[in-house]
Image 1 (tube, rainbow, N blue to C red):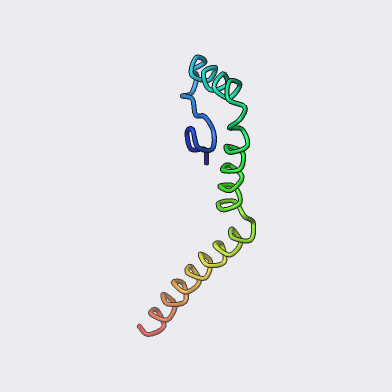
Image 2: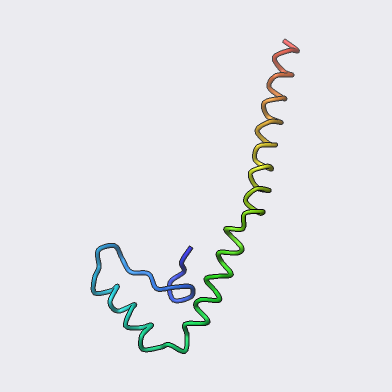
Length: 78
């Protein structure tokens, strides 16, 4: 979800120095906060929209149901 230096600042796990570098970066550049926030919000809206997720689940369930129906038809023919 976070893209380094586009929608946030990524630091390796348990790397306190890199995490502090990221925090310092944002503290020294408050003029970029809005850009980062807007890009992050756009990613959330595109990838985590409830309506899109519901439609994708419906599509996947339809595929499962079609596959199940096709298998049942093949069994009946035998």
